[in-house]
Structures are given as structure tokens and as C-alpha cells.
Amino acid sequence: NLILAFESSCDETSVAVIEDGNKILSNIIATQINSHKRFGGVVPEVASRHHIEQITICTQEALEEAQVTYDDLNAVAVTYGPGLVGSLLVGVAAAKMIAFAHDLPLVPVNHMAGHINAARFVTDMQFPALALLVSGGHTELVYLPRENEYYIIGETRDDAAGEAYDKVGRVLGLSYPSGKEIDELAHQGQDVYDFPRAMIKEDNLDFSFSGLKSAFINKVHNANQIGETLDSKDLAASFQASVVEVLVTKTKKALHEFPVKQLILAGGVAANQGLRAALTTMMAEEFPEIELVPVPLKLCGDNAAMIGAAGEVAYRNGERASWDLNAEPSLEFPWYDGNIS
Ligand code: ATP
Ligand code: MG
Ligand code: FE
Picture 1 (cartoon, rainbow, N blue to C red):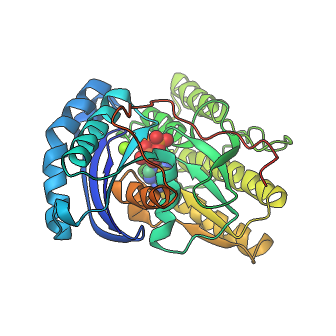
Picture 2 (picture 1 turned 180 degrees about the horizontal axis):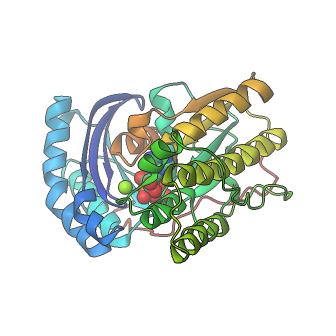
């Protein structure tokens, strides 16, 4: 089965050709980071304009690199949410147009399901499964009782982990997005600043990162006022130690409550080396019987390959969008209600 997949929810325009949901024939990614850097974040109008300029070129490249034509395709999959409405609309319009013109089924894909299904490129997914989904806009624990079903069992009450990385990075004078750079600094520093571990002892699976962000910003500002300079390596190490400890502790708690076969680590922040290492250690010690599946580094950030993987599963389960498919900027998985058979 051959799927042409589109991703344009934020600041990456990406088109991929995926075979059987787990083989990447092509995965073209045009990033706009350089256009957004000077603003310290993604500017929605700039983003949509870039998507419009890039989407046709990326589609042609994806087909060429995969050495397929429209006639070889079986379906078109597209991210329709969550994300920036103007950005999403570009991918949705392109996917609809191609599906309509070539008489192909149109498969709607939730971007977050895409992040999780990137795991298919390295393993056969087994259910029930749990996903720790950490990205620029989301931090959530997702329970998958079976294929193509996703339920939130815990999530951040305020900032996403990636958002906290990017905001803290700005205070350190790093360029956007700063997650990777903070990760690298953290490995050269020490956890000496004792930042808060929010909600870690609470009896729920939720997270909070805004208090940590404020504690970090206050620490830096207070030091600046008295003319003291703090070591950014130690700041990064202390910040990362807090984020990682909270994520790993809540994941451990979730695994005690939800017996699963696999734990998937997905989303942009899943590229974090400190998080990957700490989760690997915790899993080996506490849950050696559960397979830990960190999404491959190259597929943690936004890309259309993951949308093709999730799209294949949705396609097999009969999901089809009609021609009035619209962008859904605040699309969310449902909450687990404790009653899934
Ligand atoms: P969402 O998926 O929630 O809609 P998004 O698509 O903008 O948001 P992703 O592209 O999945 O987010 O992830 C981007 C985020 O990942 C950024 O916040 C970036 O700083 C962060 N990130 C990337 N690499 C690392 C790393 N090594 N350590 C920590 N954070 C990282
Ligand atoms: Mg991005
Ligand atoms: Fe994303």
C-alpha cells in the first residue's frame, strides 16, 4: 500500500511517500526555522506563506525520490490538526486537490497520532501501548488500548516541555528553538540549582512546567541584578534534571496503572539525550518486560513520514475524510474514561 502524506501544521512543510506504513520511500522536509529565528518563535503568517511556496515543490520531490507517480498511490494522508490554522490549511488544500484529481481516498490524520506512529519505522507496534508524547505544544501520556485508538491519561496543565525549553533558551540568549542546544549544554554542567519538580508527588498523571520556567527566569534575573553571572551549563543541567525527573516519574506511575507491552517515546523533545538515557535506565530497572521504543532521532521532529505511518493505520481502519475536510487547530485525543473494553 502506497500513501502520499502531507504535514504542514507548524513550521515544517513536509511530504512523504510511505509503503505499508513502515517503509520510507521519501520524506522531504522544508524547514522555515531561519525565517522565524529573528522573531524568537513561529510567526503564523510567515509560516503559511512559506508552506504555500514549498508544498508543490516538496510534493514533486517526494514523488521523484520515491520513484512513483500519482497512479501508483493508494491514498493521500494529511495532518488536519492540531496546529496553526493557516499552516494546516495549506496541507489540507494540497492533499484534497491531489486526492480529488487522482480519485484517491483522503485520510485525515491527527498530528499527535503521527508523532506516536513514527515508532512503526523501528518496531511492530504492540497493544496495549503507552506513549510519552513530548513536543513543542504538547506534553501528554497517551494510552493505546488497540491500533488506531488514542486516549489521554495525563497532560500538562500549562506549558509543554518543548515550550519550556524554548522559553528558557531565550533567557540564556540561545536561538529558537533551543531544546537541542540546552540538551548539549546540560551534559557539560551539574544539577546544582535545585529547581522545582512540579506535581511530582501528586496522585495524577499530569504535568506542569510553568513554575519551573518562572523559577529559572527569576534565578537568572536576580543574578543579573546583583551583577552575578551564573554558569549556563549548570543552569541547563539543573533545568533538564527537573524536566527529565518529572517526565520519568509520571511515566513510571502511568505504567504501574496501565499494564502495556510497549512504551513509545515520541515528539520533538523525545530527541533529548538526557530523557532517552533516564527513561532507558528506569525501564530496565522497573519494567524489563516492556519494550521501550524511542522514535528515531531524525523522526522526532515534524515530518510527513510519521503522518504516512499513522495514515496507513487510519486507512486500514476505514477512516476517510470528505471533500469538506477542514483544519482543526485544537484537535485533541479524548480523555480515557476508564471504561475501554
Ligand atoms: P506539537 O507537535 O505539539 O504540535 P511542534 O510540532 O511545534 O508541536 P515538535 O516539532 O514536535 O513540536 O518539537 C519541537 C520542540 O522540540 C521544540 O520545542 C524544540 O526545542 C524541542 N526539541 C528538539 N530537540 C530537543 C532536545 N534535544 N531536547 C529538548 N527539546 C528538544
Ligand atoms: Mg517545528
Ligand atoms: Fe509536532
